[in-house]
Image (cartoon, rainbow, N blue to C red; front, side, top):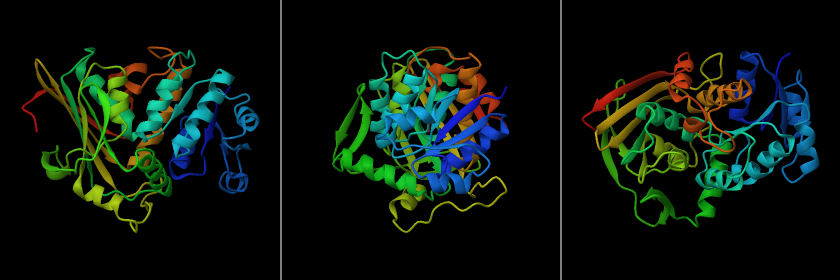
Length: 339
């Protein structure tokens, strides 16, 4: 019998990729979200279970008979607590694709005593780099510093990305955030730039040196790393900053945009620097096999721990990355001279 997976936020840009990936991998999706009419219009062939995040009864009904739930509805500051709590009540795995730093921190804090599998940030931001770092360390549990450099050819944000970014901005009162000395720190420092030597085909690019993303929550959640920094190519950051940058436009039959990316990870240890990278197309599209792969592994009994955990702690990172080979080109080097 096919496993049933509820997708909350199934009408969103990423949610549509998730539903399509579930179908591709042989699951039966149940589509859920806040807009009943939109759900029926977009997914007429699937069972629809509309639910508002402030309606526990409707959320519980959306999960009846489901084997797991994937939350693809941002802003996750508004949906994460309610949907993950419903998953715990139902006793089924919860996976989300949150890129919001504070929302992910909230999920870890809220479920620190949970036994139900909870995997936040199982997405391009947060999850992918955590797998890369964990695989690169090869079983070691500490490093001196981790730098994740995001090489995006462009960034056409979805409405959900913009809404989530605004919520995060407001929660911080406009301040910036970093992970240093073992903790999240809020500050008003101006952003700075540096050159970063990405693997080919990107090469040397100018990046914003401290463009903090969800990786500062996922990586130190299970690895002893006092400093985690993320950087972003100047072109992508500029696209995101412009209010008139259009949403992604599909260029292939799978609905992917022409955006390409390289996630370049530098892990500094007392024994030398380690490096890994992943190269692919469309940051929203790659989130779907990450989230669906997590659910498949959880339901197959392949989790390495219980309760709330990030990708690198919950799964065998090297094996997970290997299974993403149809979507990603992954390179893991034993050592490097640095950036």
